Structures are given as structure tokens and as C-alpha cells.
Image (cartoon, rainbow, N blue to C red; front, side, top):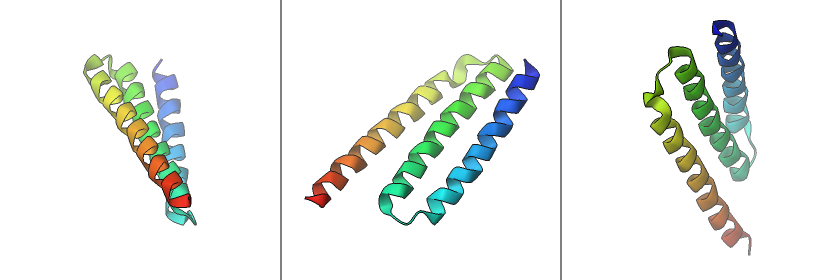
Length: 86
């Protein structure tokens, strides 16, 4: 189980690095918003891997909060972006 957690952590770190690069290099605002939403999702997945690795369930409310903030942030930006396009 430890090997699986380590492999998952390395893959999540690589995904975070690539997402940060894409967020900084993104030509548009919407690309950056998608990148930040991806970073929030990667952070939630990282917390989930840590919860499995350490057998600690106290981080589960943090995972739920990150998921909620990520969803609400994306919905709000999308709503205002659609309003700007009209």
C-alpha cells in the first residue's frame, strides 16, 4: 500500500507541476481559471492520498471544503464570463 501511495503522490506532483506551467503560460483568462480549478482538484486528491497513507480521517472535511470551493469558484467565473461574452 505504501508503494501505491508514493506512486500516486509522484504522479500528483507531476500533474501539479504541469498544471502550474499551463496556468502561467495560458494565453487567456479562461485557461488560467481551468488551471486553478485543476490545482484545487489535485490538492484534494493529494489530501486523499495523505489520508489513506496516514490512516487519518481528520482531513476529510478539508477535502470536502476544497471540492466545494473549487466547484463554486468555477461556477462563479463561468457565470461572469458568459455575461461578458454577450
